[in-house]
Length: 214
Image (tube, rainbow, N blue to C red):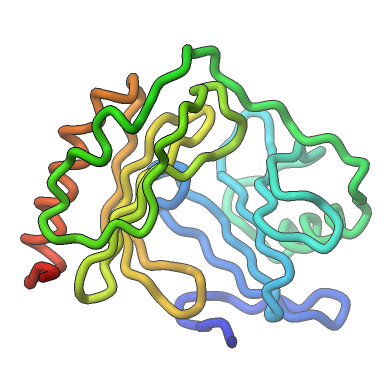
């Protein structure tokens, strides 16, 4: 499946084509983030701009496992072709022995099944719901909920280490890079995100998904 080139810049490195873009919001709750995808989709990288201690999130790679890794350099202001080249050069020098960063918060464990199944999703089809106990020191990211609505609209809830709970409304696309319609981050204990999820459901029905699923 090909990658949509809309609003993406092309970069060629060692005879391989990459597409990259910077968005004001994404998996990091509104912070500017660089996303870079190889044409064959075997490499997908994410880099948050303005980090004090630069790191990169490797979603897919031919050498490194899925996770966060420290970077020995940072961007200087705007993203430039030179920075893109440095990222790809650094990636090419790594192998599976490179240790991942440990991103953990110290919180007790919570059960999401206490409230997620009991929320009225207003006819949305629940594709996935997490009913396992999980620790809020769970490293990196854990998906909690995914609900689909008409017009390819999705409600997506994740726990992101170092950020909190991300409640996102997405427009599903064929190229695996869903459009973000709305995003909200809540840094709190699990039960308190119920009103935020209910508000997101209301927003979906009022703004993006006119009809409900029968």
